[in-house]
Image (cartoon, rainbow, N blue to C red; front, side):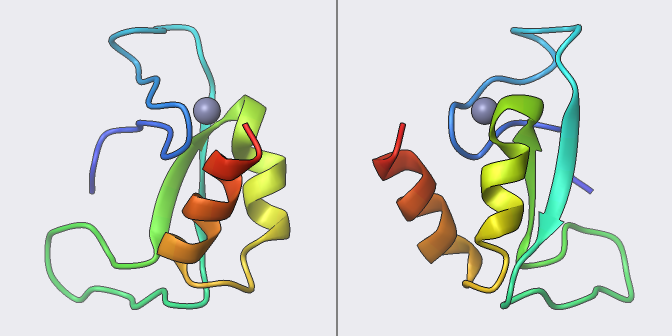
Length: 71
Ligand SMILES: [Zn+2]
């Protein structure tokens, strides 16, 4: 599992210790049996989490591209 870092704005717990994060699983989500970070499961800060959830029908690279374009 990766530590939280927003895929849109790049903030993380080191830059913003009080920021809340959540994960969204996208259309390309593949669960992992072992250790590591599953494909298609992405962290977002609270400012970008809702917009990310609305794009969860897309594959994660496509959704992230879309979210960054709308910044
Ligand atoms: Zn963010």
